[in-house]
Amino acid sequence: MQILVADHPLVAHKLTTLRDASTDSPTFRRLTEELVTLLAYEATRDVRTGPITVQTPVAPAEGIKLTSPKPLVVPILRAGLGMLEGMTRLLPTAEVGFLGMIRNEVTLDASTYAERLPEDLSGRQCYVLDPMLATGGTLAAAIRFLVDRGADHITAICLLAAPEGVARIEQELADLQIPVHLVVAGMDSHLNEKGYIVPGLGDAGDRLYGVAQ
Image (cartoon, rainbow, N blue to C red; front, side, top):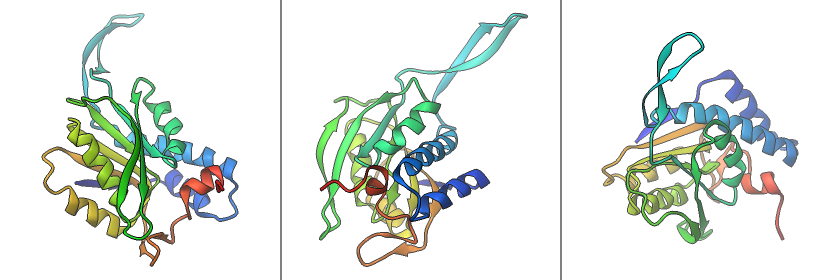
């Protein structure tokens, strides 16, 4: 698995504001969108393209265009929805699928409770959106779900990651014979006893949308 921790002052600036407990939900959502667009710039370096010739006002010009099938963006519900606008702003022609996964707070294992995805993902590049790579169980399960349907290139985009989560993904997906990339804004120190990233930024879903009772 290739791992890229974005090294850019704007990424660091926006991430710092996201960490601040005093940042309200509207600001948190806006900054998340902006941050994801910056991460998407790095995450799409390997997006598949083909040659094309266009006519400028002066002369023909050789260029490239995105090839088919279109890339598929897959936010993991619910917090991943907060990253969708920032991703599609940079990649507006991508198709969007949804994957609902929930983590058992005792075992920390993830299970699927909803999905809206093509049955056949053969030949598809998929971009998985999940704000927090903590224990790694949810993201690992999501990636395997997509690969089982035929996806042959996976890039996961996260705001923050913990070393324990990265190690689990590398272990659980070691048998996959396809490229798996991870792009994150920051790699934090560790997980606490509850499986939260430290120092982290809290529960991304709650900070994006509030606490649903």
